[in-house]
Image (tube, rainbow, N blue to C red; front, top):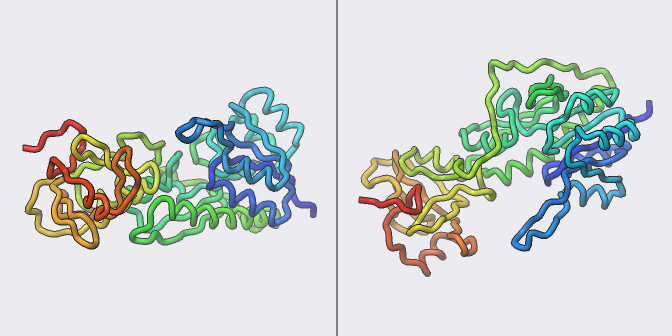
Length: 319
């Protein structure tokens, strides 16, 4: 049996291993659809998305529609006539006209154990919510937000200090392998779809700036989960002397609370002590606005805070 022609849709780094896996498995990839080039960096120069860069290296034609529901792209889709569409972090909702075009349907690589963490930021919210196990789901796509039937899932434990960037890289690789296994199983008739249990669903919405703000009156475990879930980007943050400080890594310790939340304590070899609602956290790597990222020991060698507190507002006053 000839292998099905696949149209791949994906944009960021997460998508690249899936594209590579399809090519390495010998599937004819008839095109790669990705988001348009966007301004990036301080100079705001247009930069191609990672999936476009890799596709061009592989000699695959690239398409960058502003909207996949537009007539021009639908004409392209029908010209390419893919048997299957494979999607990994594409960044647009697929309309019915796209979903129904390929004979074998549209598959999506989703980095959570659906129906948990449906939405745009599943890796971040998995860590923020303190989950200890996650995984990847390959699903048939429908018109809902990650509501389609499940084909295969693969679980993996989350490391106690693993952050979003590290988990992202692991799931991108395992998701790519699972995508190929799923396609092989579908063609062999050994994999069957099953509906999601919507009553068990949770959401992972797109992150907002406010989601990263640290509230020091919360439990230390909640604070460190937030820091892990947003590292290395966009990063959890706090305020010191009216300046924003990003926190890249920290650990929590439960102990009797003797200082108010946000109080800066001793600078130890293992980190800076900061009081929380149920004990302390040890901050390790930070970055004050307009400065480079550095260890807290390096930072406080050259900075003497006017306030003895980290706060949730640039204008907060501690009495």
